[in-house]
Length: 178
Length: 175
Image 1 (cartoon, each protein chain N blue to C red):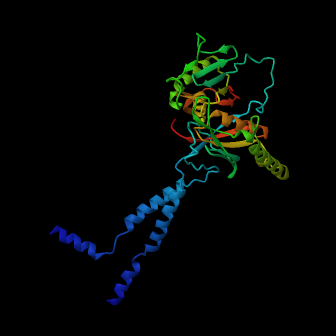
Image 2 (cartoon, one colour; image 1 turned 60 degrees about the vertical axis):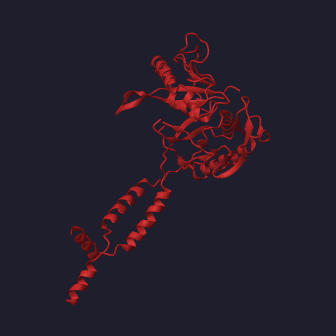
Image 3 (cartoon, each protein chain N blue to C red; image 1 turned 135 degrees about the vertical axis):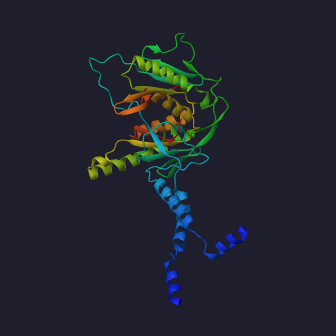
């Protein structure tokens, strides 16, 4: 009788030390877990970027640049202001006067405008951003996002399906308007 | 009647921790899985709010420059304290103190970055391996409220110190 009881006791697994360990591990891991995942945007200095050798069959270069001012975006090409027949003011004006914040910049319309330019110059992949001194870094990043790809148009590249249509993925930041 | 029966049952056995163990094990595995081993980490604070972007490229290790609202930090060492000044629209913005600049060049940052470039080049020469080749890569973590003038000065200084490949750190978001 007594022997049977001892057997029963020994089959019971003692989980308390494991519980202790787990309760310590969980707060530790919770502290060190990173809930934000990071990414990078590449850009090169115009002067230090790889020099492109001009070749004979070089097509007409677009030299697309987007000026970011306190009035909105002005899209410029080698031939002058693009996408704005009147040629006055910003190509893509701000949604609100004076562009108070990043939401005021009409990135959707900029993407559309650049999409139309991409239709015409499908080889071109570079865009030069020319921000004014007062433009905040956040606006700069938003502009880079808007000019890199068009999330509303899906295309198939090679084996990858339904990727956002790439517009001008190589961004160069120019000195800017003083 | 039923109540009485239930009470007797709980009194019989010890506290059942098996289900709790199950849960804990799942949480443990989940946390271990999401345990980040990224090369680059940001410590967001009041002075450093990294902007959100739709970019997807994973960060690689390089010289790390943090430009917050208060200071410029290179690889964890403070280089320069920034000023708050009034801009021409009367708004208070962050700027590099005038006495720290030579034209557009931020002297203290330039010296530090040049040192880093020399070290990196030395390492590349000694090891001779492609992995350590000096490509002039620099990671920029900037606060989203900084005006472009500060970013431009930092970029110009980095460019002068042979760091021409900028990688702007952003937080991956839905956009």
